Length: 301
Image 1: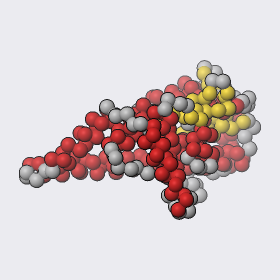
Image 2: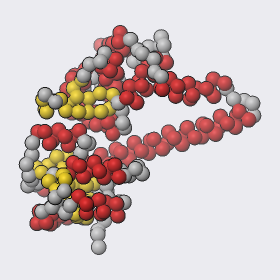
Image 3: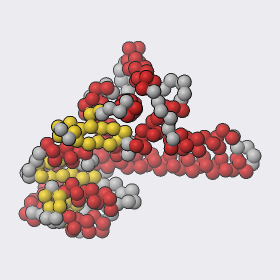
Image 4: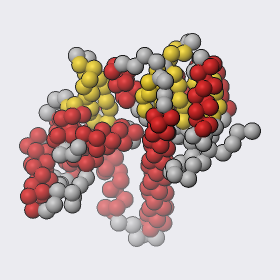
C-alpha cells in the first residue's frame, strides 16, 4: 500500500517515480526516500518508466539515473514531457555516478530541478526534494493565474457581446483585442535608442529612491533581452544579471521562471560549456516589440 507523501513543511506533496537500472541502488535510494518520509514507485528502464508514469497521473517528480539500458535520464524526461500534452505538471532530478560540467549545464538547460552526484547523501536529497516541491508549487500558481486571466477574458467577452446586442458597446473596446493580436502578429520595429532610454530611466529611479523599492527583475531582464534582440547581440546569464542589476542567483531563478512560461530560451556557448546564453523566444520578442511600439511617445519605465 503506497503511503501518502505529504510533508507539512513543503508547499506541495511529491509523488515520486525513481528510475535506475541498478536494482540494488534502486532499493537503497527508495529506502533513503522512505526515511525522509516519501514513498515512490520505481522502474529499471526508460520503457518501464514510461508505462508507470502514464499509469499513475499523480506522479509529479521523476528522479532518474543518467545511464539507462536504452538511453539516458535526460532523454527520458524529455520524452515524458513530449508525451504529456494535457498540462500535467512534473519536474525532474538527474542522478549520475560520473558528473561533469557539460552534463550539469545540459540538465539546467532542460529545466531539471537538480543534478546530483552518486552517492547521494540524505542532506542532498532533502534539499533537492524541497526545491522540487517549491518548483511545482510555482508552476501550479502560474497555471492558476493563467486560468484566472482566461476566466476574466471569457467574462469580458460575454459582457462585450451582451453590450453589443443592447447597442451599448464601445467601438474602441470591441477592436482593442483584435488590434493587440494584429500588432503581435506584425510587430513594429523599435529603435535601439528608445530601449536604451527606457532602461536608463529605470536605473535613474535608484538615484531618488531606495534600490529595492521598485524591484522588478523579470521586467528588467525582458527589457535587456529585447534590447539585445533589436541590436542582434548575444547575452549570457551573467551579463543579463549585471545589466538588470540583480544578483546572479536572482537572475538565474527569474530566467528559469520566464523560460518555464515560454518567454526565454537558453543554450550553452559552443566554445565554453561553462557559459549559458539566453534570449527571448520568437513569441516573446513579438510581444515585447508590439507593446513598446504601441506606447508611441508615452514613456515606459
